Image (cartoon, rainbow, N blue to C red; front, side, top):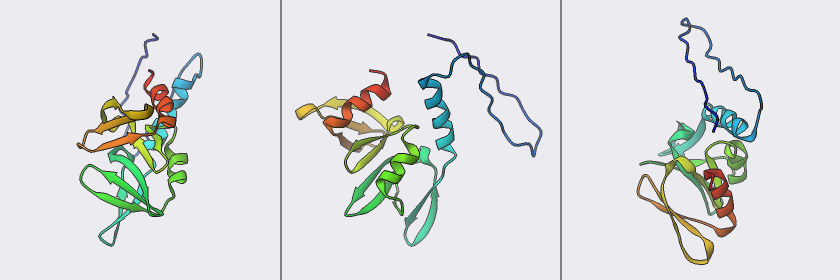
Length: 148
């Protein structure tokens, strides 16, 4: 395992924050880290109660498509998105999100535990107490993303 040195410098007010990465080799793990950092800055627009809300992707537990509508599930609130599920997948696939089923994109960081269930599927218990099923065709992707 390679150790990573992290340095944080204070900058003057009004100066734009900057991330500099120094590496001998740009591998897949480093590229995923970069994509994860980039995806955090992408905000989502969601509708709830007739109002448009800006949703931080870090607050999202999962996205779900139901009756040709896409919903954004956060800890206590649900928003409707104007984006299609495949558009969300493309925006966030290199970050902490992955396709868990035909109708669901799940935030890996919100998984509390996993349990193997029937026919090669997994059940994920989320930090908000909800359970969601990961289809067997997406289980290998989850294992790879978790390093299993």
